[in-house]
Length: 158
Image 1 (cartoon, rainbow, N blue to C red):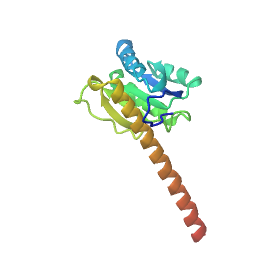
Image 2 (cartoon, one colour):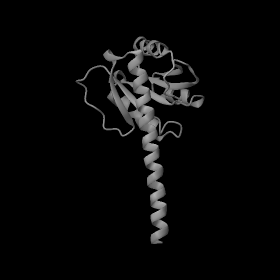
Image 3 (spheres, rainbow, N blue to C red):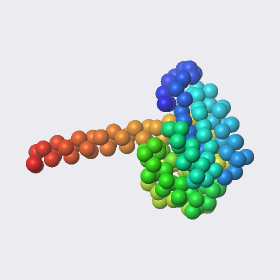
């Protein structure tokens, strides 16, 4: 996973990213930017539709999901619904890669971030991955603390 360090040492454990979209040229551009991140090994898998998402998840456990909004609203909502209900991906942060700022945001709770594709850079992607991981860790800590408090309250009341 991501480790914040002041050195440029490469972390040997790769980050697994599932990249979903329908334009191989654009997706290849995103992969190239991810490969420019020199302080972290990154392994990507690409899916083009719902069927290939499920096929990729058979042997791949993503840490992050990048979803291109060019796949269309209906396909994107189906993909998010599938990812939210899958054991391997239900807690994995999803970032939507947007073509423009004009498109409306989706109300799905699984989406952790929106990024304009025109602003993508290796450094920006790395920062976004770090922020997603920090957010995921914070949510996990809050859920665990809430569960612990509920158990303590239950013991006091019951």
